Length: 73
Image 1 (cartoon, rainbow, N blue to C red):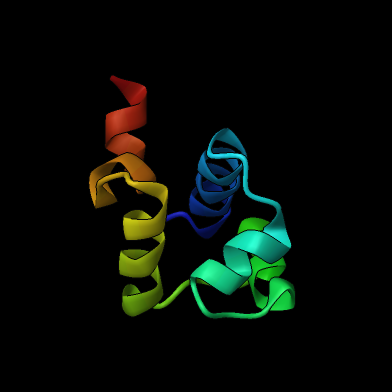
Image 2 (cartoon, rainbow, N blue to C red):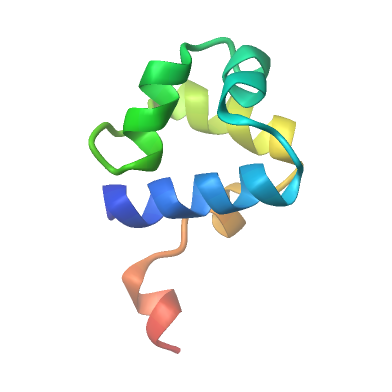
């Protein structure tokens, strides 16, 4: 899993849904600071946090995490 890539996708979906970083952090029960680090690719989200993000953003895990192989196709 490419941490920077997943961070960019989380940020993209978050913005698509109209959430600010602070609003989204509250919804997923984390701090805006940690969310910012995840979106910048400096920190990897836990499996539980990924699940929560998918639920809040209404996307599948596969949509959120695109493997390198899938992007090349």
